[in-house]
Structures are given as structure tokens and as C-alpha cells.
Image (cartoon, rainbow, N blue to C red; front, side):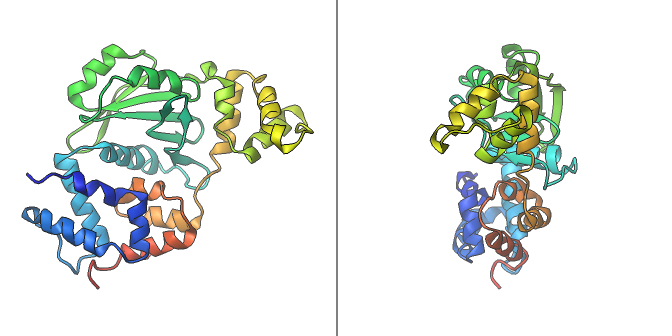
Amino acid sequence: MPSLWGVLPIFRGPFLERIAYGAHQSTILELADYLSEFSPPSLNEPLRDWFDFFYSLLLAQYQCEYVYKNAIATRLYLDRRHSLHNSLLTSEFRSGKSRADVVIINGTSTVYEVKSEFDSLKRLEGQLTDYRKIFDRIYVVTQPDTARQVVDAIDPLIGILVMSAAGSLDEIREAQSNKANVDPGTVFDCMYRTEYCSVINDVFGYIPDVPNSKLYVESRKLFCQIAPKDAHDLMVEQVRYRGKRKAHADLISEAPHSLKHACLSFSKSQSLAFQIKEKLKEPLIP
């Protein structure tokens, strides 16, 4: 079977930008030729169908990290009808040396750490320790063959989801609330300046009257006086409103199933989001 590794870049932000500029055809055609034995769509089929074709191959034969992230995006976020304007799915949260695979912020915070068949479990304990400093609910998302090993290795308060061959996510252990144990300083570092200033003003009734160069330090000192559970909830209430503007929300809504996570992660201009949405409807070769 031809390697499917070369398919992965088309599900990333830089390739979405190439779609907006009409610079995507040559790569798609090259992949189609390489994977011709799997009967790709015809050239007059819309671009969205081509992405679904490539994704179907990944799902069936190469369940890499993107397949897991897309399952989380569709089944645990979009299918549950979270508002795109006052909730957030992101991969931008960092705690210590760990960068979360997927975070969903709505009424609380939930982090998902993906461990596919291509991932090692060596760093898992350290990653989970880092996530406990920020997030309320923590899940490891893995494959059936390693599920028992994960169950035996991690804290019983951490949830476990297993990816099926068909792409569904089966919960074999529910995550318990962790927000009473978060570290307020680490939580503070998740917020933008406008967000933490809003929190400090609401809680303490003022914003530190210091030069801009010292505002972060002084605000952080105040925030660290807040109880962990309250610090978490205050952060969530700010961050959840980093939701999508209309052009991005329209792109996500109209994108094919295969591209949901990629489009949720796309953060470039509204005009590019609009152009991508329109290009996905067009034939590969007009």
C-alpha cells in the first residue's frame, strides 16, 4: 500500500491558505496520481469531495493524530452544538513543557491528549502533570491496543476515550473535575492582557496603576490570590469568548467533515476564510 504520510500536509493551515489563492491543484493531482489505485474522484468533482476521499484513506488505513483531532472536533464539539461565538476549540494552550493537542472551552475547560498508534507513552505522565495546572477535565484519547496500558498507567481521575476503526470515540472512563487543584499562576498565563485586566478589575475593583512593563507581574500577583477553582472559572469566562467571527464560522459550518478540525484551527483573515469556503465548492479543475 502506498504511504499516506504525504496526505497529511493538506489538512494543515498553510495548505488552506494555498486553496484561498488557487495554488492547490498541483498537489492534489500529484496525490491523486500516487493513490490512483484507490479510485479518486473525477476532476470535475468539488474540492470538498477530494478532501473527504483523502480523509477516508487516513481513517481506514492510517489513523494519525489529525484523524483523532478531527473526531474530537466533530463528535465532541460540533455535534454537541457548542456556539462558535462563545466557545472555543484550540491547540494553542501550553503548560510547562506541554502543548495540548485539543482544548475545548465552553462552560468549563477540557483537554484531550492524543496517543495514536504512532505515539509513544513516554511523555504522558509529564504531560498530564502539566495539564492538571490548568484544566478542569483531562482525557487521554488512544487506540484499543494501548487502552489497557493507559488505564493502568494514569490517575483514575483522568478520563479515557478510545478511537474505533470507524472513527467513533468511545468513553471507557469519565474524567473527574480537577479545577480545585489548578495553579492560578499557570491559569493566568493562558489569558491575553485584555482578558486578565478584565478579571482583575472585576475581582479587585481596580487595575494596577503601574507602567505597562510591570502590568503583567503586578496583575499576576493579584490573580494568584484567587482560589484555584475561582481562578479557573474566571479564565474560562474570558477565554470562551475568543469565538469565531462570521466568515470563519461560515467556513466551519460549510466545510466537509474531513476538514472540520483544520477549519476550526484556521485563524488567518476573514477574507481568506471566505475564499476557502468558496473554493471548496468548486471543481478541482474548473
